[in-house]
Image 1 (tube, each protein chain N blue to C red):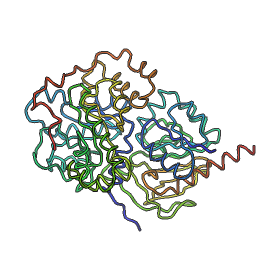
Image 2 (image 1 turned 60 degrees about the vertical axis):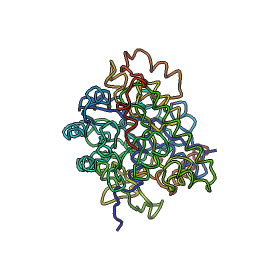
Image 3 (image 1 turned 30 degrees about the horizontal axis):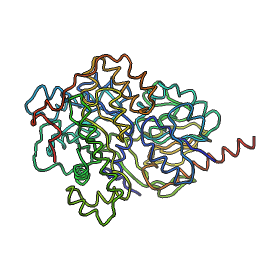
Image 4 (image 1 turned 90 degrees about the vertical axis):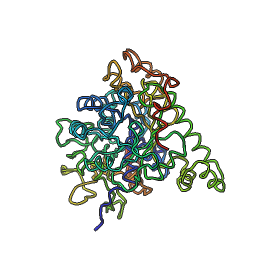
Length: 197
Length: 296
């Protein structure tokens, strides 16, 4: 049985759990390295990336998270999760997990009063997807192995790089489970591949 | 072409969802804000004085000087909240115009209106409001609050009122969930609560907005207790910067909030922190000093 974890140090954890379960898959709350060992794919939820990073460091989870990605296990970062996955962050000389070959700018749509919702067409996944952007980051540029799945007003807001998926907005705040269903499929495919190897 | 919609319920409530499992800390300047961010706070509340100092100072407590909010907003990348007086439309509009990320319509300040709270649904910026019971919680949601916090008794370092309020709200939510829908209108009348909010609670099995605990958190164990009792996160006012070692207390309270059921870890977290803020026994407070009784 496929298990998808949600990194649960802080943020919109229960919404992702609900969404994973709505797709008929088992969701696991991941608070430590030992929890991480139990799952086949991992969602990094929205929240405050600075707060999450402090807790990742305190519980020595950074290396295990990098290794999780290196093992080819799928990861999906939403908003703060995208910031955690990115290799470069505008205005910072460090990254977090740093496996997604993209440059991300934090809070790039403005402060909370500028937060918005809109409708997006996402390549291979959905048309008219209700996308909620909250103090959202955007993807400034990507390397060639990264595929752009969605843009909004000329800014890149969703990408895929093999087994890694990232978006600026919050699919978990809606009842539209198409993106999570897509990620669930990525996790199942990666498991099948590992079994065949 | 689709238009971007700002200030929707999903955007305003969603912002609070992102704060879940975290700690929001009161700060009075840029230096404290940086300490809070470095400790892992999910947001800061920018104030002129923390609640225990507001108590000590007496007189009328108002919205802080905008310069303090500007200084704090310039110092950190996490969201910045600020307090407006209950019913003070103009203070709230000033804070919105400054671009603060969340407004607390707060009983910690002296109310500007003793009859009406703000019509928060009219604003683009989201609001958090205090509550002592489900009636109060539902009225605030009805007015457009996007986040709640149980009131506790601010500035006392005494957790007892926060526990009372959180237990009361959550017990009543459970009651509503198990009630027959036929009974909800009478319950709405008894609570003084909007019927449609109770109906939402009944259908969703929980409050429609995030509910943090506030008012009296002084130690990591206090923060963990509030999470144990079902809070979505914790506000810490005087508990950090009125303790002997703010950096240590701030870090410890953040960790305790995340790992509130890991008791062995809580042992380590609670060690050698130094002296917490000095507390106040609630029964020693006179009626006019009880901030929780402000708002209705």
